[in-house]
Length: 219
Image (cartoon, one colour):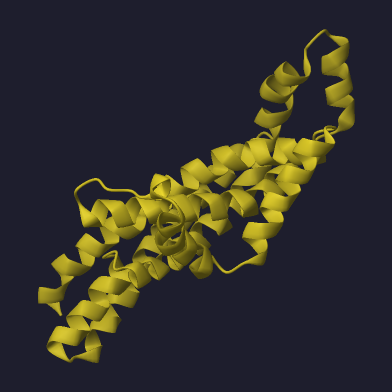
């Protein structure tokens, strides 16, 4: 089993890197989608609503297949060619996971923003702050501490769902495990692989709990 660890750790780099990058981009994008769903503009509101409906209503694996296989076939504009097949697959996976995460996090962020007392919004506007300034300086900072637990849960779920990238031959932990199992014919490789997933999950769970504890002091 010791001889399998280097390959599994290389796969862990892809799993963690993809999850962190997609989570960061997804949360940033979800903030705009959440604000769009709260917008009084019918066009913006309906677009953001349709976006979340699509990505929450279809399987992540199907979305990954569509972005990786279908879009490049529809138009060469969507074809990614960096000269490195692994990098190409990572970018496709990053796009799919970011868009999916944005749809799920948007609902979480919208609920957190709307949980802030409306009196604070009205007081900010009375002081002369614009809508953008009120959201940026007053509402969003207060909602961050309420976002940490649900966003942390979404992160852990995405960390485990990252195993789906093995279906497009991106070498994450799952793909590395299947490769080792195929060459050695030993199912024991799944033991260190699952332990590695548990260790990574435990580390990030601990990080989010520390953040939650830190920011809950101000609640």
